[in-house]
Length: 143
Image (tube, rainbow, N blue to C red; front, side, top):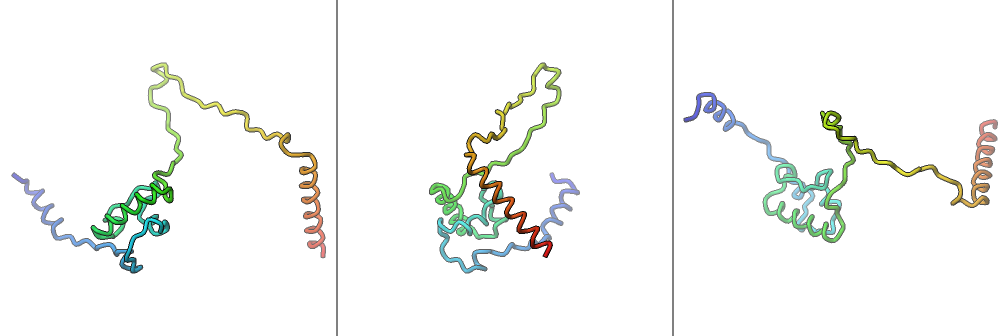
């Protein structure tokens, strides 16, 4: 038993015509999909290194299988990453302070750069080079 609204909706959806996406492999006349062709394979992957589906890529069934196999082989050979990390911060959970949970904070060691790893002679050379460059620029500006 289908409602009247569902029948109307189904009839409308049946009349819709979708534009098929152009096949990028046919456009470039690619005959063989090689796992070593990283630039080609990256176009069939998302920003998080997931394999795009057929609707997104525009490839046909056999080409999509070949692409997936090539991407998996390239990952195995370390030519492509399995995943790409995305850095995101999580918001504190609501009600955490009521339950007595403390916020986890990461304490980073002191990141101050000490000059102990740079020899004094090298630091003096860098300062002298910077002064020479500024003097030459000032001379050109005055001229």
